[in-house]
Length: 224
Image (cartoon, rainbow, N blue to C red; front, top):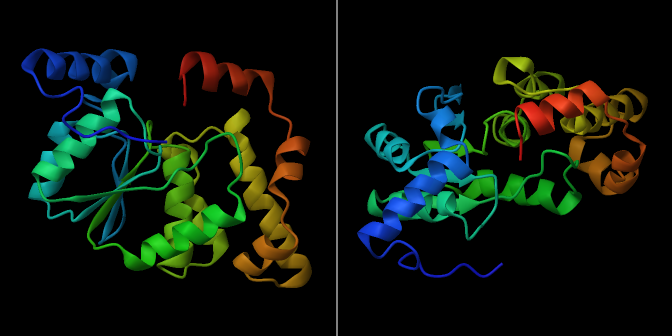
């Protein structure tokens, strides 16, 4: 995706007002004015939902050096405002696109490992709601950066962070279950399994989400 310069769409007071309005109402930012779903994963890493420019200013005051956007690059207002805010506060913003309804592929897993090795800390990672993609990002951070056991790292995908297991987003839990079953059977490390046995296409094909969960995720919470 080609992203236009930051000035595009933010160069006038009216354009900035429209962008902030889109962040609040089209991206459901009004729900995040009070509830941030913000948690410390470790002393060097936070997770939360989509930050506003005000949240980026808060992060800068807390000494955050890198913001990891798990929604991926976009032409939408939330992305432009976030990137502009990071630039104005001297924070490096990096994109790592994760999906809430598909298990990560091998290239994404390797990209996450490499990203956690090269970024400057302290850091903050986020998706839209701070629940599903942020949960997977936090799991991978715990696994690759903190070297936690997988059974401990997967706790980042839980109801504590508003992750929903019974809808389409439950495919992320199926991904975790698949690795834990493989580890119990063969003792393969996480990336060894991902490079040899793991088939994300088949895992997604075979996963069946419940109707109630889909209704909650798609219609009530309107997860991305």
